[in-house]
Length: 443
Image (cartoon, rainbow, N blue to C red):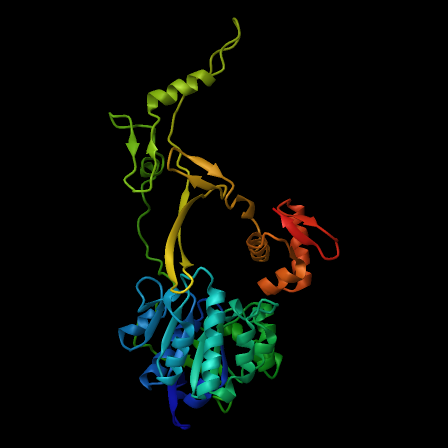
């Protein structure tokens, strides 16, 4: 990649505005703007310009909106069912090596991932190791960066290391976020290049204050229009306001347009959403889904059940309760299918499935009528940290100390102790042993 290569990203007034490809690819850049201000559109444009100039990069796509780049360009899409490769079947180490060695652009689509943070952590570690070995320019673009390098101890450490030490390895980083106030300040401060669009929240304005000379400059940000950005740092000699250029591929992150149309008929709603208890002549309703239950109670049977429970009149006082309506109530059931690794020598992924009651979180068995076991009901309302700790407790039947749980989950020991206290107060776990270093033995 030639040092003097530049890419066009927009206009400043009537003048075209170019940035150094070398600085963009190997440096540290942040693209920041609130929702609807054109952040994702600008990221897509930058990706297009890199692809036009055969510059390798990887974009961490959290919303599944960058696959449209394939309309015009050759780019390897790792993600869900329709991608070039399935996320759960890819060897991240091999992917990272080939990406840097062969200059292959990649979309890492984690929008359907069961654990997007884990996938990003594993890939970023593989990419850093590959860059350390090959020392070739390559750019890592991270959408919704506040998810992966937040201002707390859950920040992905390898991304922090890339922000500090990636440049010498040729590994650049471009962070994109709507909420700079939530990004790890050590990572944000490493960004020598900034493209900052409209921001109105006071906390976010304060977070980008380090990039501006005075308060008056900061006060310009809420007045920006969608697609307008201030460009600063090593990619611009002076702070410059630009208007983003036009993309050549479709932007998938747009907000749906409001189109005036007539309101629907109120009389149609009841017919569509409320199902009366009316069964066909054979008096058995069968849903056509292969995993659905048969409805074995018909209207007459329902009436007979209700008759037994009606309150009778007492002597000459009172009247029988009247049945005015019998309706069929639908319980939301969630069908879950997961793939579990099996095998010691030759690993394969075997599908497993289960059904959860969408109201109470209990596991539902529909093989013979409807029955329940507790399932996930105890996890309803728990925080992410509580669930992570609980999973480790369940996995290890011998009992774990707070420090051991911290090591397995990546949480600090003080956080774990606070979480354990919360779980104990909710009567989900019990302690055994010394209070100062409790060992968890039962659920």
